[in-house]
Amino acid sequence: MSCFDEGHFNGDLENGVSIGCGEVGFEEEAKSDIADIEDAVKVLLIGLGEDINREGLRKTPFRVAKALSEGTRGYKQKVKDIVEGALFPEAGLENNKIGHAGGAGGLVIVRDLDLYSYCESCLLPFQIKCHVGYVPSGQRVVGLSKLSRVADVFAKRLQEPQRLADEVSSALHQGIKPAGVAVVLQCTHIHFPELESFFLESNQQAWVKTLVSSGSGIFESKNADVWSDFFCLLKFRGIQIEKVRLRGSSDQCWCPSLSTLSAKVTSKVVPVNPAMITAVSSILNSLGEDSFRKELAGTPIRFVKWLLNFQSIDMDVKLNGSLCSGMDTLNLNREVSFNDKQIRSELNLPFWSQCEHHILPFHGVVHIGYFLPEGFNVIRKSLLQSIVHFYGFKLQVQERLTRQIAETIAPLILGGHVIVVVEASHTCMISRGIEKFRSSTATFAVLGRFSTDLAARAAFLQGVASATTSGAQ
Ligand SMILES: Nc1nc2c(ncn2[C@@H]2O[C@H](COP(=O)(O)OP(=O)(O)OP(=O)(O)O)[C@@H](O)[C@H]2O)c(=O)[nH]1
Ligand SMILES: [Zn+2]
Image (cartoon, rainbow, N blue to C red; front, top):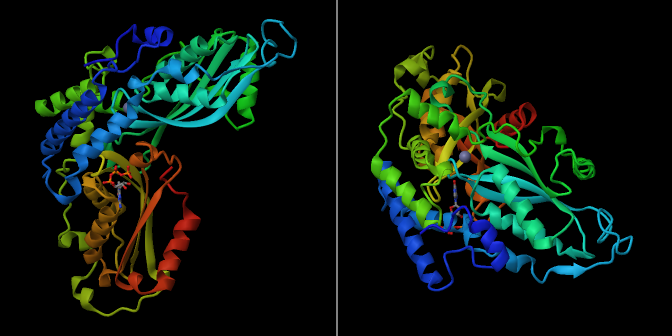
């Protein structure tokens, strides 16, 4: 059932009708929506060739349903309730003078509100740093927390940055009746790897960012001088405004899936399992969206194409003798002394993976260290990058990914002395109510001398610390 229709937004503000799917039997409806989403997730997992009964996946359909429902709870929240009762009388600087100095005497801005939303084009969460300001009028101000709560109502939907900014500024204007509202959003979206070119280039950026704004009342015009007050107060926080896309500016496609995955759909006929597409459409409807809404038209196929990256890649990593080329296999048994001057490092190899608990991406960089005695060839970086992708492009947990990379490299190295460190940002940690935006997870796997020799580990880790900033974000 869809609660998303053109007029729903204004109607909900004025008469307080719940934005959700009606009050009566709402709990029951929510439960059946969760169950429907779980069934759809099972179809997706089976479409990936996964065993839905295996340990790591058994609870995944429920976790995903819970996460998506949490991430789109905004459809069921009433903006009116949030603002009503939180408008406080406050004399202005110049009593009864209407306009800029009316009310409490000038601009009020709350900066650095960390929110997350779900991208309507690819169904992945994206991060938002939201800055909301308004000029009070009518001798009253609104509770500061309500600015964040109202922004969150619209963030917790399937969104696109500009529409989100517009909805927040419009909702606050209707709720507070100020002289004007201004909203600036800094949005950060995971970058989609271009698999074909990916194995060649290791310098793929991890994030796509955009800055959008929206204004109402005295902020309606993007040239209004009150915007410069607003931008100055943002500059205090180091936010460079020049890059803000003011409303109505050219709408370059924000979501990277609109350029990469769609291009792949058109450039090459890639068979996509229709049952998986139907499953994603049913998830959209269970969330209270209208899967026929034009912005959602291509979302199911984009989401399925993204998922299929993690089915398994047909790249066959040849770990036979040819990889040991230059390593004289007779010497492989020869004892050679280990010294930390002979540690070879390959750092910042990018990876993408998908957490099997929430079917949400985690991505970052892999640092690999191994022992390279005199006279032996290094392992080609492209091979190490291929091994990283081979294990990355699966439904994973980070610890398992780290171990599998180390175990695959060890046999290629004299003595099997290898250390692997993975640094990653987990999308499941920035969303789902956890919302730890700047968190990143590091995992470690050590084999051979690296598991017993602290000095060797320290030598490698020092090298990583001084040679690189984490690529996780
Ligand atoms: N160790 C590990 N845990 C992960 C990874 N990716 C996701 N998780 C965790 O998987 C766990 C699943 O816990 P559950 O209690 O079954 O599910 P949940 O209700 O979504 O848990 P919360 O995250 O606490 O909301 C969560 O704690 C996630 O943080 C990973 O790569 N490694
Ligand atoms: Zn997207």
